[in-house]
Image (cartoon, rainbow, N blue to C red; front, side):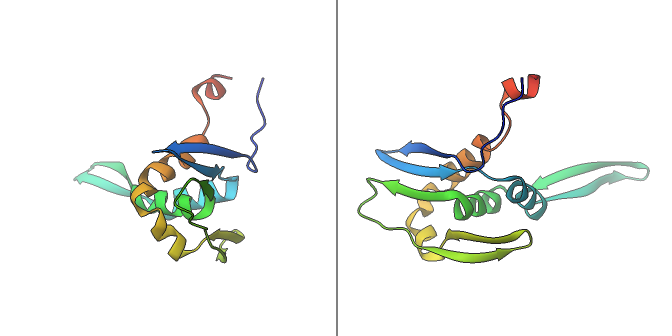
Length: 127
């Protein structure tokens, strides 16, 4: 049985005693991240060409954090600021650049967690 995806859900992710609240990417956000931060190049010689996918992992993680970091508990009294940002798929309330700088050392881990939790699990793929 397929399980409905809840793009409005929030999940806690702990890093060194801080609970970061992470949202889930909706379909438009996921497609945008894949399109914006991936490209296909043809590699080869003569008639032996094959596609090679290149992904800007750090850019994709940064934008995932901007879109889906919702807050944090036990993070030195820091309050996150959110601003409106227009994307090709619509306007979103996202983390400001100033607030992104607060979490700079954690962007890779938080971004990867957002992307992973927003993907199908192995169990879902089997169904």
